[in-house]
Length: 95
Ligand SMILES: [Zn+2]
Figure: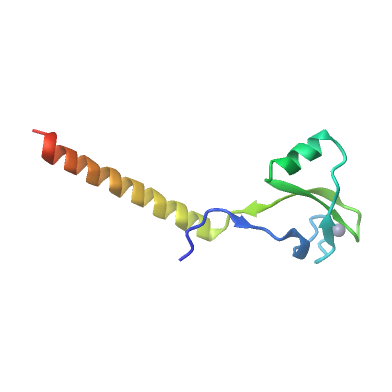
């Protein structure tokens, strides 16, 4: 079982959002302040397609079905722990 919410994406090996070709996307240099700050945030990277010339940002991390399973697992865990703590407090200090 993988307890992860964010999964790394591999844009270099995925489809181009514009022409749909696989393996044509390469990292692109940042050209202005906005692009640099996006890169610094480590959330997304700039990419460029060699085939059609598309240029844009692609997220470095993504969520998939395992993310929802993990989130559900954590929610259940937190609720259970909260319930147990409440029970313990009630037994010790409650009336
Ligand atoms: Zn393309």
